Length: 153
Image (cartoon, rainbow, N blue to C red):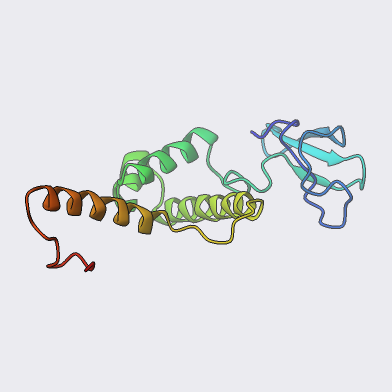
């Protein structure tokens, strides 16, 4: 369950939209079949929302532990079919959880990457250059000119 401190208002028209850690989020009550889900509301705009909104748990008919296990299996490379059999969950449900988690990760990644002030990053190119430079240095120290296949003259 998402804690109140991490929760933020999901209403895009609200002044406190997306701001976590403020005093604008409060508990409104419990809901669900077993009254085990927390209902939150924004004191700024009055919008009510589930504590699991914008998380992979929102709308899932699985426990948090089951969602965690699906994510764990996917990260370890276990197939959807095997995960379905191991956890006793429908394959379509496993796929939905994986897709939801992927979308959530994409949103988080997008938010993190937009705050960076960079024009260009090419670390893979840098690594290739460093590795090639090491090879050229070793060849030249052995008396080799390094002209074949090195790309340098």
